[in-house]
Amino acid sequence: MRGEIDDDFEKNTTSRQPTSPKGLTLEKAVELGEYHPDFLATFPEWQQFSRIIQWEYIRRALKNRRHQLLVHWAEINNQIDFSKKPHLQQALDNLQKQLAIVMADEEKYQVEYSI
Image (tube, rainbow, N blue to C red; front, side, top):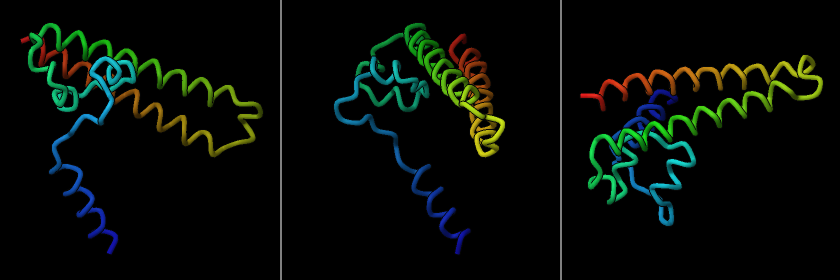
């Protein structure tokens, strides 16, 4: 049963084309830290930009996302009586994993957009 649910979820999330939410602009998406080119390509103006400009948008979004994760990490880490709240360590671990993903994605996109 659980495997079927996971399989259905995977099919539904990977087969859909990303669409930009109504009212969200490219600038706002970048400001909020959305850096995946597939998502950014859902904005009509993205196709009009050169690869250099696209890379600059991705770089800015990566920087914003990294900043968000670091601020969130600091907020959790600086909780009063942090040592008495072991459940918060899991949140820090998850944030560190997300930071590692962002850093790996940045390297991947540097190579992809420098060609």
